[in-house]
Length: 186
Ligand SMILES: C[S@@+](CC[C@H](N)C(=O)[O-])C[C@H]1O[C@@H](n2cnc3c(N)ncnc32)[C@H](O)[C@@H]1O
Image (cartoon, rainbow, N blue to C red; front, side, top):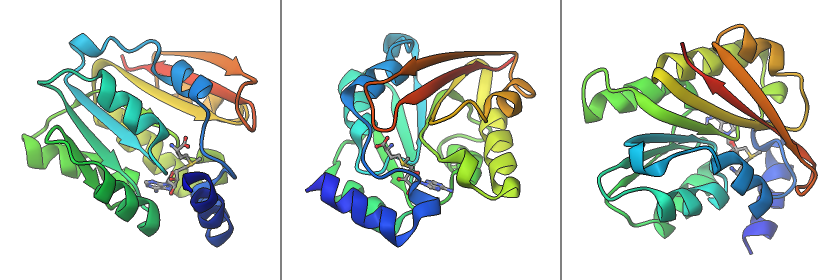
């Protein structure tokens, strides 16, 4: 059901959805394996889709942490918002560029420990891509992590221009195979 809806949303707006199928559990594992959830209090997820990563983040996050999720697609937002009922989680129907606005409503100038992004950066118009990368960087704490998957290495240069360190892992156990970028803020 979730898979069928995903492909339907892809054909409605290919540039927004950016993939034909939800990510696999293998990619989910690679995205989340370097997060110490016991020390992570403010988590942001960008572009949850049907919630493949969201569900695992919720399972792993501690009781005193919070998860802020931004999804722009109407259908994904509504479905996820109906399905997830957890006082630690806030699902927001807005574009990823506006992260800081929502962190500020929790606490002025609150910064995230970790941002987990599935946004299809390389199909975005350049201005949106640059805005999302910059606003994510601004919304992170010092030494905070920005974890992003992509289907190519095209984003590497952009991420390296803004983060103090960028490491890349790869998994073939996803369709399409994916690169996972872990970026650390100076
Ligand atoms: C490649 S899909 C990934 C979905 C899911 N996380 C997964 O891995 O299966 C990209 C997601 O980003 C969302 N998205 C695209 N542009 C966005 C934006 N500007 N702000 C927030 N979400 C956006 C899409 O609607 C879609 O849910």
